[in-house]
Image (cartoon, rainbow, N blue to C red; front, side):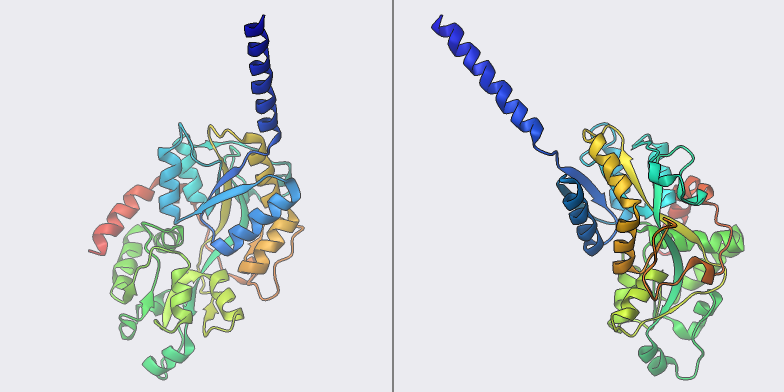
Length: 332
């Protein structure tokens, strides 16, 4: 009888412990491609609104997308936050993403929602040219500021251009696709080959060119317009220029396949697509929200102010490995 009582008490204790465990919110794990400042602000606000704790790992697009694909059977995170749509398309084709049709996606533009609901865009990305006007004036005197992509090919600019490494960063890959799709394959590669002669550095981080311009280490750079605008607003000597024939894409959020926190992950996607979250994002980054109810921060460059090409994101995704392999050979 004593053994039976002891066993019953042990079972009851185990059940009580399990019940308590279930009452504790499960930590949502996020792989974040967007910067620490906005990741921290968004995840903190999400926790305040839902009570769901969040931990995150911040790294480059290439690193995190490769992780998502390699870990698809046993994911170490629940959410992939950030990165252009071509990277989420790649992860979806590898079977690494869990489709989710958020009710908040119903009123979003079609380019911001995957046809299979594997990813959803939450802010608009456009490329531009950044200029440190002080260094530019000191180095180049009366040469006019570049206003087109072709202007960056001026031999006088050798060593004074900084752009992101497309192998590591979605920013850099978007730029490569910008040139290939606006000029065609042959002329596009000619342009890229000529441009590399003027590039002094290929950092892995998409935020690096704007920072290096701000600190005056380079006169010219290729970056997202919102990043250039942000540094300009913070008082750095960075002038954003929107050249014609640029690309427009979206930063995306997706749920990882086989997540053990599916309910929390869906709530997170809903939150990221909300008016409140997108306005918080824009207040930090000067990005343009995709939620039509959200207002971009004052000073943001809107999509209507930019001359955009008809960007084929499916093409960009399907030929990514081939293009990056050719790029790697080009810069050796």
